[in-house]
Image (cartoon, rainbow, N blue to C red):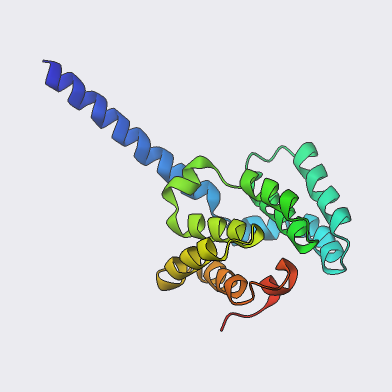
Length: 172
């Protein structure tokens, strides 16, 4: 009787874990449809960022988090982190990049975890950790993560440059 109870509990746990994994990866993915719907809102902050007005762009994004009813703020936090990184404010960049990724994404999405950890390693100026993440991601990545793999490789290949310049470089 005791074994059946443990077996049942284990089944429930595994099914719950599978369901959480599915929802976690579904939420982490951004579809073109979502991008098109939010394009107008994103245009202004991107224009500001492209002109070097990082703090103005950051303020727009922070305001959108506070005033929006969006449940998934992870992408916005990631962009805020990138804007701080582009302005050489690496401590703030790391703070927001860390807010951008859930425990489940770090646990179950190998390719995102490598990109996330590699980006933080670049900002921390930890070339050894960046190399490990870059090598693993570059060696094995899906088509979906090709862009991220290429950007991480560019960060590694241009390690001595500021984030803004290294990120803009093409990977070789």
